[in-house]
Image 1 (cartoon, rainbow, N blue to C red):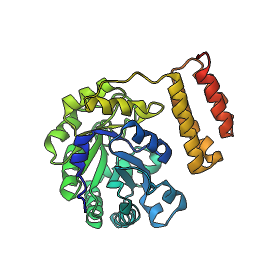
Image 2: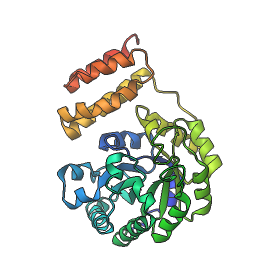
Image 3: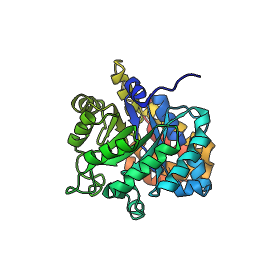
Amino acid sequence: MTEQPTIAQLLAENPVVTAPMAGLTDQAFREILREMGAGLIYTEMVSDMALCYNNRKTLEMLPAATEQGPLVVQLCGSSPETMAKAAQMLEDLLAPAGNLVMLDINMGCPAPKIVKNGEGCRLMQQPQLAERLVAAVAEAVRLPVSVKLRLGWDSESRNVLPLAEQLVQAGAQAVAIHGRTREQFYAGQADWQLITEAAASLPVPVIGNGDIASVPQAARRQAECGCAGLMVGRGLLGNPWLVRDMARHFAGLPPLPAPSRAEICRIACRHLRRQVELLGEMMAVRVMRSHLPFYLKGLPGAAAMRGGLNSLNEAAAVEQALREFLLKDLD
């Protein structure tokens, strides 16, 4: 049996990591990111309780056996027992396909509905519970376990360094850090200083996250911070070509031209059609309302076009509107 590469080896081969984004990094979008050349791809966050109750919608969010890896499934919860049970379920369900390489514990989500349940970033205020969570999940599964953190809860409690060290001792084999506090949500600029310190001090791979929207930014962050991986989130929306460009840069390949309007149209329409295959037409059109404005961002007339797209309920009509808008005036 072929030995699976370690997380450090996977990141050394390709440091481009795509972030978990609720409602956005579903299978259709993950397939595009994989084709563009992403390394580790994180799924949407899934609830431990929902998994344990065999919630249909949650089970449908899990990657299919046919989806190409390496994939990381992110779990969210606050009970060591329930998280361990959910992790075992995930390993039993997904590990046989060979595309799942790691389970991640969400300790960075700032959303009010998550933190009010004691989950996500709230766990950074409860280091003992966070440690028990990691230990319970790491003991329950054979797969590597990672954690995703922020710098801390607020500017007065930027505790990511001691907490990360504590979680590594508890069994975490990789750490991803977003360079903002929970208090900031996504405002201001990401601060990479503590990420740099974590990369220098922790004995496991550190994945840096925050405000990577171009190849020069990615190259500078890797050079200055020494992270094993660079995680891209919101910068991918409407621009999966960022993954392509980063992957080529780190592989030492020459850059490719920016996508033309025709290429944007091709990928956006393919994204829509794949959603229809996976979700059915009604849900696909609804989900794509979150993606399509990003594909059109910055183009003249995009705001009016967005309003028009939101009024359409049939995939064929959406695709026709996209083609008319993106391909107009092209030879």
